[in-house]
Length: 618
Image (cartoon, rainbow, N blue to C red; front, side, top):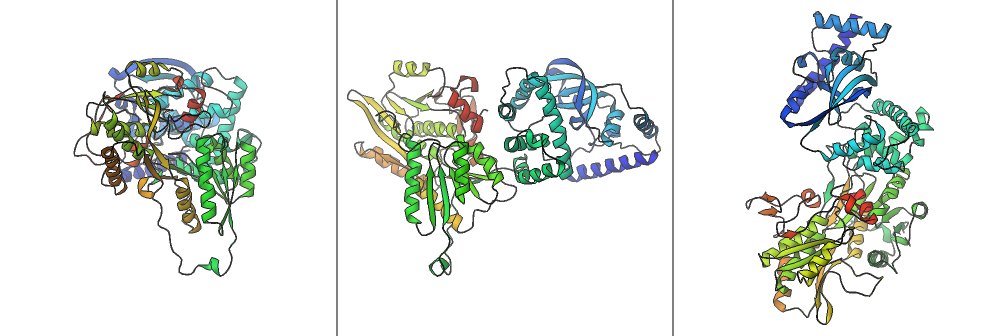
């Protein structure tokens, strides 16, 4: 069986060569080099169990690292004692099967071998999916959010197989199966998950050997679209076909594929000859799908108004129809009746995604931000720009150095809105303090605190509520004569949809096969503005106009130069502007803000639903 060793050695040489070209360490890593004894919080012996061979990545100590390439194939020459022992072990495994468990240390979901390195090498060469091991878990003093989420999942299932790379994935996986991460799952379901995963893994490995692609992430995408029955009730051919349909999504969510954030519309291409005037073209059917009704939701009303106006502008080229109070069945009906679908709430994102995979010839858009999907394009406004102006305006009207800010839930973009408001206010009044409250938290103590501190100017929702007659939106003030609205952001959805449809008609919206595309347009694109009460002093109105011009011409940004959070310095005065990604994913509050970012368990039901989709801290 010496030829088997030579084949394994060849695999090792190939992996070493590839690692060297990438500038990476070519041999297995040692856990002792990754985490020091002083940084370990505790070690727990989990007992003997079957562990996934794919997650065995190194040795416990530095001892014999260079005997194995980073794929655990043997790196020693074929005429060494090591090679002879490897061959003997290979022969024994083929004839009798190795029964003794190896000893491994698990650190953040990966395994490092203390006893049994050559057994691991042989098993990996034979492509054995699991290995019997005694497992000692090592937990670091430094917490990792994703690993903490995995630990909750492990306590419910005892499964090591699922190794997701994105925060919130374990919660999402549990939700897809109608479970939570609070209680132990029944054994029959756990066995079904494990069996389904290994069936899926075989099909996945048949399609790719790229290390950057995560089989677990792909498994989650597959389950989101097809469910467990999509594996259990599929033959090999059917499973392969389903894999093809989700493959763009698998590549898109891989860690080295960033979201393509488009902060400006594509320039409209004027045709040399307008063939539509010579040969009438078939109208594009566009469906606008709402989670509520325009008569009861101000947000839906604004989207519906945008639909009506853009339909009038393009009446010779498009035909639109709206679908209020949508559920999965209504959305499915809309997709079958239209060429293009706009779903206007993040709550419709998952159903939109499933249908986008099923109907790959159609185009899908969802009004949400920072979503890593290839089949669905996302769109939102740069609301922080308006909030920056409103913060500065509010500071000119405040005489006690205290403003209130009422947010809903901590989803992508929301923290940037709060910070931009606080920075704008501080630029006018360096002593200004922003007291932050969250309307979708279970604890409402912030309301009493704001009353006690005599805060009377607030930043509230962007739009008024249709459910009650009030003007507590935008920037508003409590006076002796009641509530007075001072200013508010204005989203021009008709302009937004017009620019998207222009690009659609110009065939500029064909999705790259391996990227997620998000549109994030603002004042410079003509889709966002602020309206200011004419009753306000003209210097205040003039200030807003000056700052507005700076944002439009990109000579001004609230997130440029020196920035401070509640914890300390974010960046120094000479620093440039934060990237779009850094702005969207902010998880810190400016140093003049009094308040916190709420945790998941502190949120209301709707708050939890929204943060599960696009929460800054899922």
